[in-house]
Image (cartoon, rainbow, N blue to C red; front, side, top):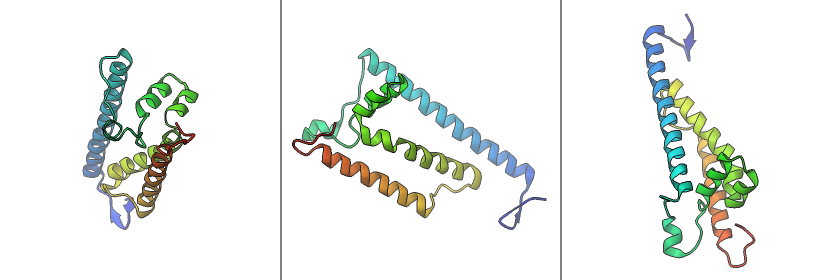
Length: 145
């Protein structure tokens, strides 16, 4: 019988548990995708858009300003337009997607919602880059978007 870290795997119970977790993860992913697509349709039609609270209060762009435009441009296949909305986030998007995929896989396969030390360090570095970008884009005369 196969083992996992020295333990015997009970096929029936573990398979059902895995299938239930996988179903939950996929349902949440599909729900988030549908929610994002519905929000995109509302923004494109001009009916609704969530304003940036940070920008409304300070007049400065936050590190996430331009995310809606970036997502809409990516849905249209316009990489240049997406880069113009938020270049830092567009460049970091694959790394964030990988961290999310690993977190979902760990939760589904190992029943562990925690990230490894390396993944936490990577997330800290990614957030640090976004924070530096947010500060740099708010400087007077900054050539950033």
